[in-house]
Length: 328
Image 1 (spheres, rainbow, N blue to C red):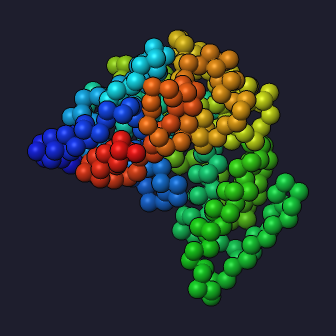
Image 2: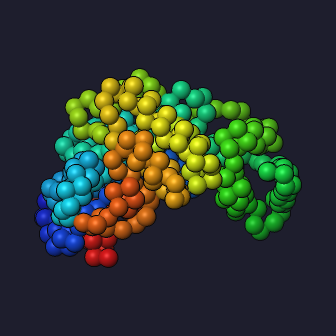
Image 3: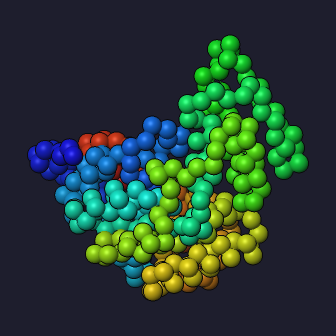
């Protein structure tokens, strides 16, 4: 594991600390792992994550999400408060992120999607990546009926563009699949598996934590658990009744697992509408995180808390990002 020299950390910390005064900052991670194919740039390597924690440890201002939330509830500015959050509940959060958080004694919140804990399938965007972006020869024509509309894609191995075609197809299909229901989307993924001659598989590198693994998350109290719906939908694309079920069922399932109230929530994909934040509040959550990039100020809406997405970068680059975020 790489370490940043002490003199560099002090210099980095001083530069960042000078810019923290305006408010607080919530950091958004998803995964701590090394994988080759990462189309949405969700992964931070364990070595880089350790460097991030070195920088944050020197700053000495990382708090739990609920501590920042309490600061806002009391009508105060979250002065120099930084929060680490993880979305979804990938197994590398437990095996790679948690040991490092414990080593540096830095707390974090993990927002869990309960519907995938006992499923035999990956998140749909990961399954789509496995079908299209893993090395293999794909058929030259794909025809799908999506939501009543026929779509067809053609490519040729002789074309100059053939190497980029799978990635272009991935993003095109993502846009078409995300508004669909879980059932409709799974049906189309089954068709894609047949088309590509790929077997259904749950990769160890891409699975969610199991029920048993999730139960061990809060040992040593370094991890706070939050809600992230049951099936990870784009909430604005479903009815208020469906949104309510996703939110309330997720909270009830987590509270049954952990035996205490779950108070923090994050909107899947950062997606919500006018009804959603009210439904989150009515369900009994006390705050909710978006994916809108901004500083948390004294008057920030506690059910629309902004977060900055952290990239896969080394400690020096991470510190520069922190400094720039606080300057905005």
